[in-house]
Image (cartoon, rainbow, N blue to C red; front, side, top):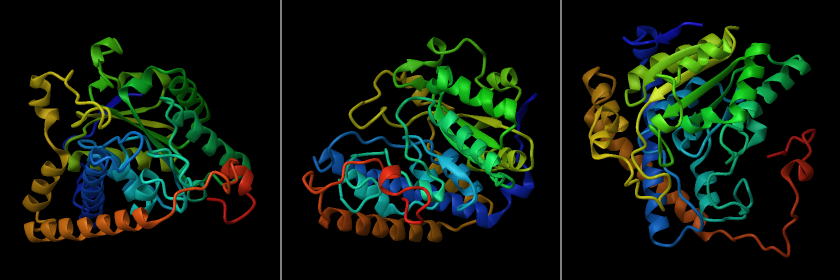
Amino acid sequence: MPHLDMQPYADGVVMNRDFLRSVFHSMLRARILENKLSSLYKAGKIVGGVYLGRGQEAVSATLGTSLIQGTDFFAPLIRDQAGRTAFGEPLIDCTRTYLGSVEGPMRGRDGNIHRGRPSVGMPAMISHLGAQVPLIAGMLFAKRLQGTLTGRVGATCIGDGATSTGAFHEGLNLAAVERLPMVIVVGNNQFAYSTPNNRQFACADLVEKARGYGVGGFSVDGTDLMACASVIGEAVRRARDGGGPQMVVARLLRLSGHGEHDDGSYVPAEIRGGHYGRDCIEVAMRQLVENNLATVEEILAWQDQFAEEVQRAVAQAQQEDVPDPYQEIWTALSTRFPLSQPNFQ
């Protein structure tokens, strides 16, 4: 399968005003939410880790917006708040999880990003690198066995480090052999935690791995909203139209440490100051304004609106009870809510 670099932009995707504005809304809402989470963590209000998607919002939100809620599957990674938001996750699910509310999707059992809503196609995040690739492949294969796969897409985001794991290999190989409608978006942020690309893989570009598996391969500048809209949108379309698995490698840089406990001092200044060190939200703002897709006044109004939404979600979660270990039924969700029951969360 040839390597496809989808720049210049595909006009049919890029000039879709509603699509681009929707993607940007998810990007901006996620950034404001995560800035608040960072502040709460530094104030000692959050137990455990806080992992930010700062710098990866264009990639994540574009993928989430390209999927169909209620039909498709999306397995987010630790930096996918923008994608979660685009795929329909309420802000309150995030704040409840981080603040330990018993009302949250994980009932206060987990303090950060291991949350999901399987009933709406969003499995809980798995920390083991690459594990979501075989998970999505399995979900799609199950739908094929049930005879309900047509028209669906399953997607996940992973980091560059995950492409070196056995789970990535096994899941992608299965998807390729079975020609499952899967999209894998690799955020190549140049460092797997603190390990640089040249100590991870020897190929010139991770997209070369797509050729080895016989799947569609795309490269994109992950800091560029319009490029992401063009490339990721095309990858999702091809998967949905029967083209088999598609892999998109987004070149970018994580604009924070691995987590808020990490200062990222191992990233050289020349990389931070380079092209991929630019802020995708600032790039997106310029693109929307310059292409008459939004005004500065609209963007400022969105900032105020989303900041208010985030504050309400935080305030609500802070007022709710934490789980009582003596009252909690410590069972897996699948045991408590069998799949045959409509209230499975």
